[in-house]
Picture 1: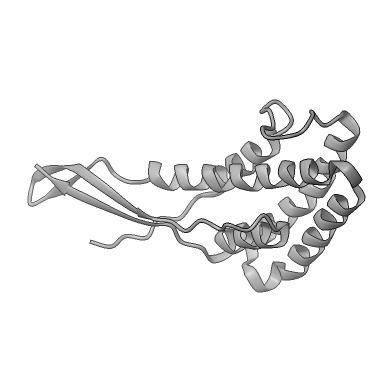
Picture 2: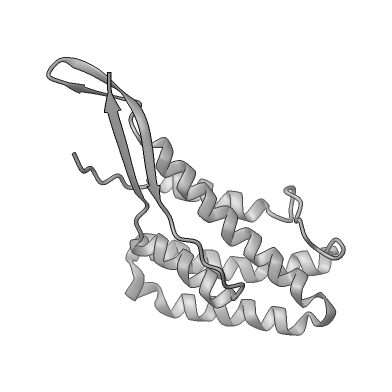
Length: 165
């Protein structure tokens, strides 16, 4: 049986909230030194643009939201370029938020898998789950934000659940 499951708006908002917490309550790892409030504020401002693009992609689809994506990528890249010696840390902070949203979306999709199914009046329990996932090796903000945008607008996470008794 193949069943498509959509992430609902509450789950989508929870994923965005998880990303927003990175650096603000959830510590950033791998930084040379903690970012101060000024940098965290600038990162939050750039992230707001990313969220605007993701919200539009979720609601209206890829084509309608494309301009917002392009503006968000430019804003994030300009912030990194302006960060001087902190450029890698600022980039890592934004990537951390992207990764947290992706992780949250994947976990929420997995939570949608039914632990049991009824077949002919017989309850079968989940025996195994196979997940097809790709990992982007680039540290590019453009690639990471665009991949998240695509996942939000039209993406799929392939999960196969095998049931038995």
